[in-house]
Image (cartoon, rainbow, N blue to C red):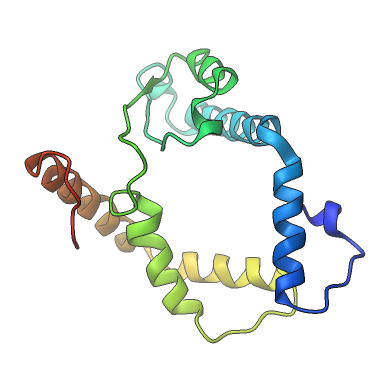
Length: 160
C-alpha cells in the first residue's frame, strides 16, 4: 500500500481514507491470499527452527476471513500437515485481537500524533514490547474462559 500511495498528498483525513479504501478494493482477494500464504510459510519456518517436534502436530486457529479460507490458502496449510481448528462465524467478543489486544493498545496510544507510518509502527512495536509476556498469557487464558462461556450459552453473545 505504501508504494501504491507514495507521492500523493491528501488535504485531509477523509481524502486519506478514500485513497486507502480505493487501494484496498483494487488489491483483490489474490493479494490477501498470497499474503496469508507467505505468513503461513514464515510460521512453518519458525516451527521448524524452534519446535521441530511440533511440525506435524501443529494446530492453527485463525478466523474464517476469506483469505484464510480460500482454496489456495487451505491447500498451502495442508502441505504442512497442520490441523486447522474450526472457527465460528466472526464474533468480536471471541476474537483474541479484538477483545484483548486492540482495546488496551488503543488506550496506550490514545492522544499521540504520529508524523508518518514509521512512527506509528515504532509506537506499536514499543507498546507490544512493553505489554510483557504475562499480558499475552492473560489474554489466552481469558479467551479460553470466553470460549467456554460461549459453549455454555449455546453460542450466544458473551459479555466481558
